[in-house]
Length: 139
Figure 1 (tube, rainbow, N blue to C red):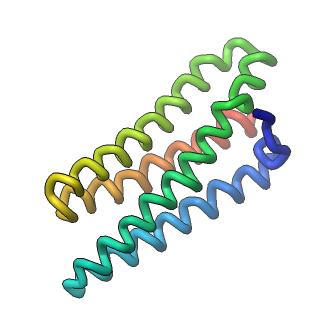
Figure 2 (cartoon, rainbow, N blue to C red):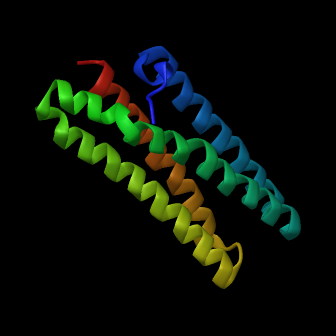
């Protein structure tokens, strides 16, 4: 799978990250608002949308980075391997948190643990994006 040109352009890559987190934050706020108003059915539908967003937008972006983009940095400079390994670990953490949310919902429905993990996804993603841009584009 080829690497799209926008991944290689710092400004465009940043815009992808920024758009991703804004969408996640907005969708998370929608879930929380529905919960606050006791609209459990609506909250569940919104959480389905949120998890789909994480999987098809943010994690799909991570997959595309791992499918060649990161390797380009290692190929140019082998000392980047440790940085790339850390960035991939961040992606793995996001995948694990999403999987945990799915499991928790199946077992317990929406609860405080689900909300905490949804919010943790945003924090992990924000830190990951900041560090990725710093490490890869501001050398």
